[in-house]
Length: 233
Image (cartoon, rainbow, N blue to C red; front, side, top):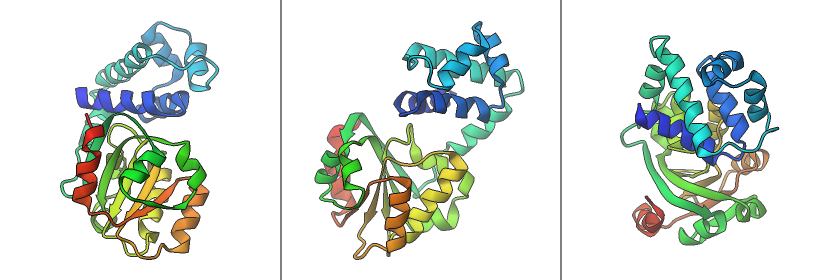
């Protein structure tokens, strides 16, 4: 339960759209603004203002109360959504290798550390911060992981880099990211294609449409993990 609460709160805190993330989680739990407001003892307009971005970004205490309220209300409903989420959040062995940073790392700095070349959206890379990264076996995620479980690759927050290994051209991983966005309403801050010689134009096009910096690197994954270790919790 604590892991789930931390995951939800972490995503909201680190999201660029706090209100949108709050709304998403409220809707995932199937809770109305009125019911949530009553539980929190605030007005429905307060919830609406947060979700619509009309109120100052919530602090950690507000987010904690919000997440606790979602879980408390769901508990009264036999924890139906909580049980499903706990099941879905269980990491897939040998598919998602999730790492969290102890602070934000600028996209350009991240790229330099892993000796990466930017093949799409280089200007956005400088404006991007990542709070972790996930190494993904691209063959296994496409063949073995259902779309509705793609949320697992985002760890505590989608503001992270997804590093796809065993890549041929990059088309399949980018399609997976695009399909996953429609399923989970999440997209990564950066996508890295590992070991690819030539990136498929379709992959580049998807990255451009989704406004995701797309990088390539051939640095061994073990070296990448060792280099990035200093940023981790």
